[in-house]
Amino acid sequence: MKTIKIGLLGLGNIGTGTYKALEMNRDEIEGNAGAHIEIVKILEKDVDRDRGIEVPAEKFTQDPDEIFNDPEIDIVIELLGGVEPAATFMETAMNHGKHVVTANKAAVAANYPRLTEAAAKNGIKFNYEASVGGAIPILTALKDTVRANKYTEVLGIVNGTTNYILHMMGTQGMSYEEALKDAQDKGFAEADPTADVEGIDAANKLSILIALMFGKYIHPKDIPTTGITEITKEKIDEAKSNDCVIKLIAHATLKEDGELDYEVRPTYIRTYHPLAGVLEEYNAVYIKANLVGKMMFYGPGAGPLPTASAVLGDVMEIARSMK
Ligand code: HSE
Image 1 (spheres, rainbow, N blue to C red):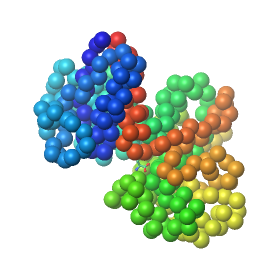
Image 2: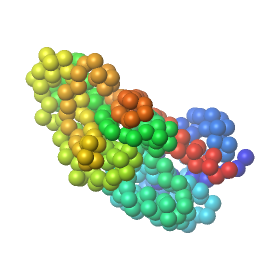
Image 3: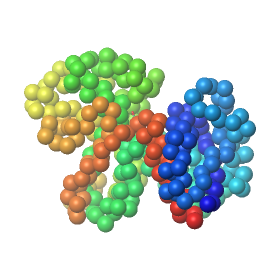
């Protein structure tokens, strides 16, 4: 069996989850990919942190060029988070002929044309399934499986933190502050939850969905965005009395004149709509398309192992294509 060598950028929560998932499910992954998969180098400053995994010290480097210039490395997995230096590192890896896999929605959304053009120019694969909806295979479905359709609309619950907060406010009677603290205690929300609660993370994901579905690039900063910080118990109760729940919805519609409307905002959803049943930190993407009608993709949208599942699926797809 061929050996595929990987350079991993970042050993934070998702990087650690990916390393762990590869060890946990090695037989499943390698058997289905038809290749041995080896993480040979890891760009990470924090070597000593206890991550609950055994990583040989010689795998760590603090110099990204050691990964870019290593002719043996086939795939670079970028899990640094943030826009820069992540985007430049991905482009550099592509320019060195490496396939790139990432979960980084902020870097992909802010640099979609630059990264997809670099991938095409270098004839390498650029896979970013984990960047929207965590483990949900939504991007592969939109790009391949359902691509025969003309897409007309997408409504996404694409941020786990805010869905959890709204769910706890709606079902447990918590205030916004109590629900945010609970989300932070359970590890769903970041210590600085701004990007989640202000809707910025959902706008990044909507930008990627729009690019894939409608072939149009909208920078996330140009997507009108309202977060959930103004949602009160009173608003939740008012929604309930109208047989609705409030969800943070990333929405895009193709109008009859061919123009696209797009927005991220808290939205009343009827209790009988499938999106209303997306509870806790789960995500779902609901699409309308001319052959399938209405379709919903549902699953865990965040967390180290669910995200690792999509990252490793992308790696396996590349490994199969390399045989
Ligand atoms: N902070 C994100 C969320 C993580 O809560 O959904 C996954 O992209």
